[in-house]
Each structure stands twice: as structure tokens, then as C-alpha cells.
Amino acid sequence: KTRVGVLALQGDVREHERLLSRLGADPVRVRRPSELAAVDALVIPGGESSVIDKLSRTFGMREPIRAAIRDGMPMLGTCAGLIMLADEVVDAIDGQQSFGGLDAVVRRNAFGRQVDSFEAELRTPTLPGGPVRAAFIRGPVIESVGARASVLAALDDGRIVGIEQGALIGLSFHPEISGEARFHERMLQAL
Ligand code: GLN
Image (tube, rainbow, N blue to C red):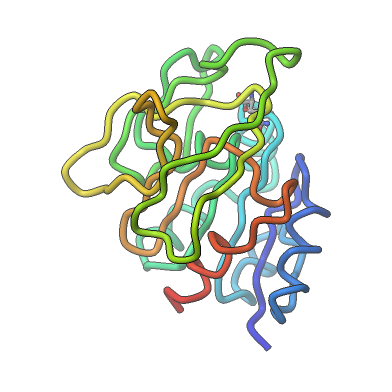
């Protein structure tokens, strides 16, 4: 079985674990460097990116995760997880840092407040299996995509909400909440 880590510092860890089990993978909670060293891929969940950032530094996880990204470990970040994987974050909280890895500029809370959560059908031309219905919960938008990354998902109005680069995938929305498994599958295909 493929051991897939879920960064379990804060956020919707359980939903990702459920989806990964459904795909036949072995989900493993990752909080310390030794746990990261024991997995083949990593999911960074939705939650609050500034908190995930702070805790990752407290737990000594920032540098090991950055090293794993450089080494090509497949990773999927959803919502706050996308923010953590973006090279540049707009509207970050004071001193907030990301791990980086995705050549893109991401704006936090771009769709308004918690009450402005919504669902939408996405354009995902490179994803097999038809349209994706996505849940947005105070998610970020991908404002610009650099030459090294490519668009994976967009809203009808053209706003970019999913990108990939090498073995990294970042999504503004929550496939783990709607039970949409194709992005996790895509991450596992990078193994
Ligand atoms: N607003 C959160 C942040 O900035 C992301 C929300 C989410 O992950 N659902 O990290």
C-alpha cells in the first residue's frame, strides 16, 4: 500500500484520510520530520494557512517539507494547503510564510468571508472523467501562474482555482469535502 501523509497540524485532516482510504492508499498523519520521512506523498489540508505556517515552524516541519518539495515528493494542497505551496501569497497575515513550490501568486480569502462559501462547476480540460463540482470555503484565488506551472481548474469566469507543477497540485477548493477523488488520484499517479 502507498503510504500517503496528511499534514496534521491543523485543518480538515480526517476528510482527506477518508478519501485516501477509499483510493486504497494508507493515510498517515504527519506532525514530525520522522513521520514525513516515512511517507511517499503528502496532502496539505484546508484550514487556516497562517496557523499551519506557525505550527510547521514550531514542530520543525518547515525545512523538511521544503526539502521534500525540492526532492520531488508528490503533494496535494487544498485551500490553505494551496496557499502553503504557493511561491507568493497576497494578503498574507503579518510574517506569514509559505513553503513554496508552485510558481504562482495566490490571494488569500479572495472570495470573501465564510458566509460567502459556494459551490461551482469547474472547467478542468486536462482532467479525465467529466466536470468537477467544487466547494469553496473562504478559499484563495490563483492570481497569476508562472511559466513553470500550468492551470488545472478554472471557474466559468476564467478565475484560476487549480494548478500543477511537476509532482505538486494546488487547489482553491475542497475535493475532500465533496468526495471528488480525481485530484488525489492524480497526485498518486506522480509516484
Ligand atoms: N482562509 C484560509 C486561509 O487563508 C483558507 C480556508 C480554507 O482552507 N478553507 O488559510
